[in-house]
Length: 332
Image (cartoon, rainbow, N blue to C red):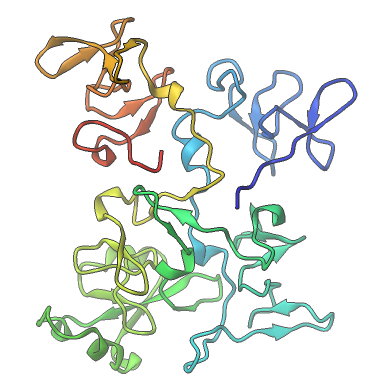
């Protein structure tokens, strides 16, 4: 399933959203005086139309790829969990709407909702209802290898505090001496022997003991299931994200509708008959394109650290996520 943003066009050719607010052709809210992209709550300037936006009206790197970065725990309601089924326990308000135990409206897939869309714990809209599946679920994501997965399959199960922050459990060090100890032993541990932490303390104390969820599974400071090396895994133990690819514990959020124009990161050069870039190597390991801009051997514009940049010089991809030959991850 692929989702598209439908941008309305007025009779005068100007673009607008469903609330008649001016947008550009990509659907970003703009200041009609100068076409700068503005924030949708306070209308403050976010990106300059002249200096930062490209000719297609897209925001600069890396935001054009990572603009869907969010933590799923921040958009899930606060629930008690059925110990037999592992499912959240829902309630209904006087109007018959589904709510969590704090009375906040949720959809039948446990996401906090407003006007059919999904919002976070601060009330900020994260997904339009048209981006969700017919059942109200967040669409599947992709990892760098192009494998599709459900966001819930990498989430730990937690209680939450009054501010909807997850309460991470910390396994005491003396229970973690034998690294080969079966996970089920940890899962059987009485929660009263674990320290519950949230917010800044979760990150500060993560090295004093292993972080776990309510079921005793290892998690990182952002509440994702991890293996012994800190790689994000799914509920079946299959690795989906290498630890080195995470940013502050968060994996990239890549959807089928994530937009990426490869031309923005390619240098200028001719291609040989087999499709490889014809680039000049001025020194061993130092290639340039026809405009004498530095590129890697696959023809992507790079900075001095080997990170892939766009034509405006904004960093698009960290060097660490590239293939050994400098190629972008398969998903792109």
